[in-house]
Length: 594
Ligand code: F6R
Figure 1 (cartoon, rainbow, N blue to C red):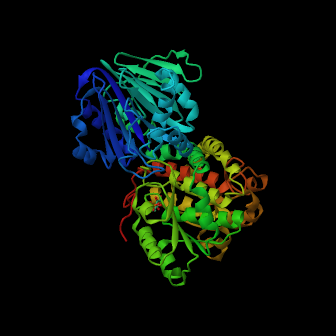
Figure 2 (cartoon, rainbow, N blue to C red):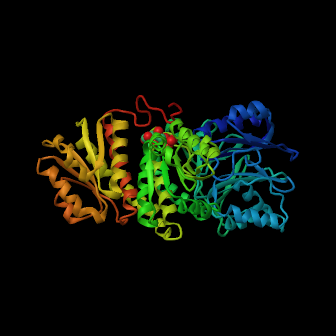
Figure 3 (cartoon, protein in one colour):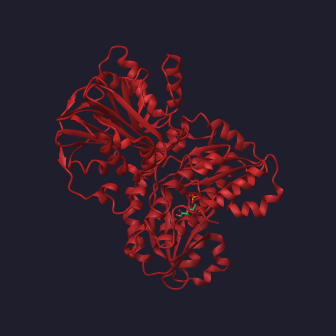
C-alpha cells in the first residue's frame, strides 16, 4: 500500500532528512520504490527516485542531502506497472513546473494515459500517480488556478486515492482525498500531511482528519479545507492525538490481524474496481478458458483459495480446474503435462519457495502460467506469463486474512468473466454487514471453544475450502488442533472423537442446509456442541447450539462472507489465550525454504 507525506515550512532547511524519516515511518505499509521531491525558495525542484528500499535508494541518490522549504516523499507499492525509476513517485508535469504523488489506485489510468499522450503530454512512465499530475496540469494550462485545476482533475480521476501536488511558484502544498487516508499535521512554522499518522506524530500531535471529497491547502503557518464539489471553505479545528505510535500504526486496532480483517470490505471494492478496468483481464480469461487442463496451485491459505477457485470454475464456467499443492502438481501431474495446460499460481508474497519450485518446473516444460499475487515485483510476478494483483497492500499479520478474501474474489471474477461479475459488486457492502453482524457472535463462540485443544470445522461442497481455511487460522494462532474436513466424510472415521461438549463448526451455504442438518445431527445426538456459520435458516437454528448468522449473499458468495467470522473466531480465541495473533510461534510470513 503506497504512502505519501508532504511538508511546507517557512524557510529552506535540510528537508531531505525529514522526508527520509517520514518515509521510514510509512514503510510498515509495504513498498517497493521510493522518491523525494524538494522545492527551494527560488522554486527549484529537485527530484530523486528509484525502485528499492528507502535506505538503499537514499544511499544511491542521497535523499537525506536534499534541501528546500517544501517537499514530498512517496513510497510506492506497485499494483500495475513494474517497480522502476520511471514509475516511482513523485512525478513532474510536462514542463517541470509541478510535482505530485498519490497513494491508492486510479482505475481509469490506461484511458487517461492514452488521452494525455494524444493531447501531446510528455508521459514518462505507466504509473497512475503521473496521471494525477497531468490531470491537474491539463486544467492549469487552460487558465484555471491550482485549486480549480485540482477540482476539475478530481472529476477525471476514477478510483480511491489521496494526492499531494505543488507548483514551483507557490509556497503551498495542495492535497485531496477520495477513499484513501489523508491526515494533516499542524507544527511549529510548518504544516504537513500524510496518508497515515505515524509519519506525522514525531513532528506534531495537532492533527486534522481530511474527509473524502475535500481539498486541503497547506502553507507554513496554516491550512484551509475546501469542498471539492463547490470549492466552499470548510471549517474544522485541529484535534490533539493522544495515543501512542504503536496504536497509530495499527490504525487504533489492538492487532494488525483485526485491522486487516476490518480492511476487507474496502479492499474488496478496490480490487473489483481494478479488475473492471484491467486491460489484461480478457487475455488472462482467454488463457484460462482454453486451458486443458487448468491447474490452480498454492500453499496454505493460498491453496485454500485455489480449492474455492476450482468450485467457481466448475459452477460458473463449467470448467474442470484441479487445485493442487505445488509438490503435488510436480509429483502427481508432472509427467502428463500437455501444451494446452495452464497453471494459475497463487501467492500472497510471491516468494514462497514451494510455489517457485513448481513455477520453474512448469516453465521448463513450456506450460503457460498466470500469477495471482499481492507483492508486485516479487519473483512470481517475473516468472509467470501474466499476473493479476490482489491489491491488498502490505499484510503484516502472519495469518493471511485479507489476501485470502481477495484471492477468492479474484477467482470468482475470473470464473464469472463474461457471465456474471456484476453481482460481485455487492460484496463490499455484504462484508461490512458481516463484520458488524458477526463480531460479537464470533467472540462468544471463541469463549466456548477456548478450553478445547481439539475440534473440527466442517464444510459441504463450496464451503469445504472455508472449513479448511477456518481450521488453519484457528490452529495457526491458538495452537489448538483443528481439522477441516468435508462434512459427509465425518462419519467415515473422525466422528469417533465426539463426546459431550466436543465442538464442531459447520460452515453451510444456503443450498446445502438440508444436507448439512444430517451431518449436524450425527454430532448433536452424541452430545457434541454444534456451531453453525450460515445465513439465517430456521431448520439450522433448531439443530445447533451456537449460530453465527451471516448476511444473505447467496450460494456462490456465501463462502467469501462466511470466511470473516471464521477469521474472527480464531482471532478472539488467540487473544483469549494470551497469544499475539500477529506473530504466532514457529511461523514466518514468507517461506523461502523447501
Ligand atoms: C496461513 C498462511 C500461510 C500462507 C502460505 C503461503 O495464514 O499465511 O499458510 O498462506 O505460507 O504463502 P503465500 O501466499 O505467500 O505463498
